[in-house]
Length: 122
Image (tube, rainbow, N blue to C red; front, side, top):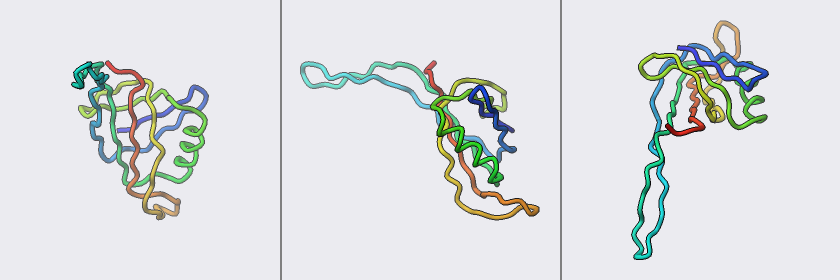
């Protein structure tokens, strides 16, 4: 499964993912009542996914970091946990690569993870 991240001018195609985990969450608005109780009002569900790769080329990570520094929300074409292709506006976490290495002579980072969270709740 491949995902793409776009800021409208540039599109970055990520390599084939190793794994996808649903990290969506329910969003609530909390208020305190006069008697001190806390009341939660359900706003909706915010979709989110964590993608994992065996390795990602350094050139892709460099381009992604430059794009992330320039904006806050991006158009992401992604695959849900049931492998259905979708598109939406998401915030994208900064990558935190862990292991550096080479694959076929190309510099890569291994054990790469990236998390996306929807801008809007549904």
